[in-house]
Length: 346
View 1: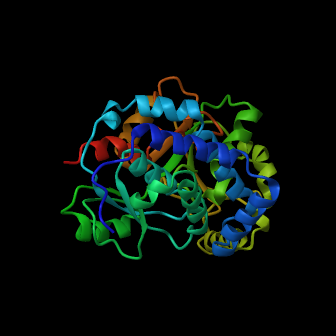
View 2 (view 1 turned 90 degrees about the horizontal axis):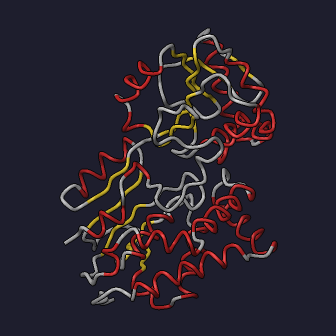
View 3 (view 1 turned 45 degrees about the vertical axis):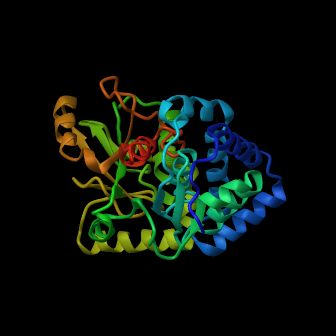
């Protein structure tokens, strides 16, 4: 396939995604059920509810006002530029998590040479099919491959382990290579019951698989950690998922054998631990005395932190309780502006 010589007009690119957002928001119940069932069959961690939540969030993200404001933030999108082929290695840990990278490449006028995750291909296929139904000319700008081979730059999402392979294979190209990240919460101690219930959303949505899921909570010294557990009860259903339950049983057994003190509500284990990253079904916690000391401590691990959930005034880039898994178009993974990167390619 010959590479297009120039991008589609920006107005057409923008309109396509506006129409995509409207289509997502107008899906009827039977269509939603079919999409959810296909995704669940491909990945047992994807429940119908979680897939529909991801679609709902995407629909909000693709609302006209959001898209227009996004495009206005990048004057370079209006300028003509050479069409480049961008190799994408998409993650599959939560539903449609790789779509934002696809959107960035297409809205920037480049070609997306895409390696889909086997854990999340059906939902991405659905979204790509909708894009091509709306704007068939995007067919020249989208390719799905098993192996990246013909690209000018790459955007890869993986783990600390896979990033080493990505660096080896793609290090000589312009690249964005993402590693492990997680999210944390910093409590003041005066959070309301409603705020703590929203914190549960940040912990349990998508069973905690996303980098935007809270895996550790920092509490002021003197606050009883068990005081936060009652607000999590509405997520007890996660314990009925067989894979989650297996993780919970395994971790509980390990902690018991090692005689490690933990708190447990029947579906979540609270463990005092210095690590930001916690195993599935486990929430780490740590006490702090002075916020300034905590901030200094966190500066050393800032490259591992995606979101900070808090209402502490001194934290500038904090996320409101319950909103970690509701990112907007400008909420880039790892804080790296993908569109700015794409516009800077020569």
